Image (cartoon, rainbow, N blue to C red):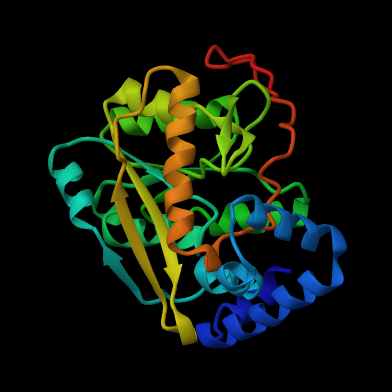
Length: 287
């Protein structure tokens, strides 16, 4: 698989996106389970077909662009709101980037690392290790780049996030990813309860970090990406339930900006899996 990724990594972005668009539509047409979840999630959010139909092809582009982002030459990136990062770094404060499954969520951390991380403020991101051994080796290799540290969803990974923030460095999370059992609470997301991580609020509160909303817009015709940044509307509440609701509301606002680039096929409302590490940070809540 790695030789194939290396070959594709040298392809132009427009070609990868064209192939990905085709793959996205094939998956949508060929899998009833995937299509049903995709449509149910979009309709749960009150979206009509015209609003979310482009997300079918965009979901395929998300996969097809990975070889280029992981192993290929840099892609063009523009910024919207980068002054928010400059201000936080100048103040010596850590940053908690909250990025939903919107657009290219791989590009946000990589774009930061390329611009600021190699200069001494690396970003640490939390990711879920691949279950397949062959894929895990590829992912682990690709996600460790200059200015970017990827840590697994384990207690050790969480400790590394906290350490990075205490040093005034940024961290990145996908807050609409279903966390392991015990590391979240049930909170409304587009009008339906979803198991939501409390980690972002805990990290920000403990380190006095700035919380920024971020997502990478995938530009048309392979022109690259635009990373959009927004401040969190209000400081995250100390109460886990209220903080989770705040985070979900913020993620909803980002998704409404570009519903055609959201990963509607993600199983956002699934039951959480088991948490392997005993942690003093955990909570026990049921719906």
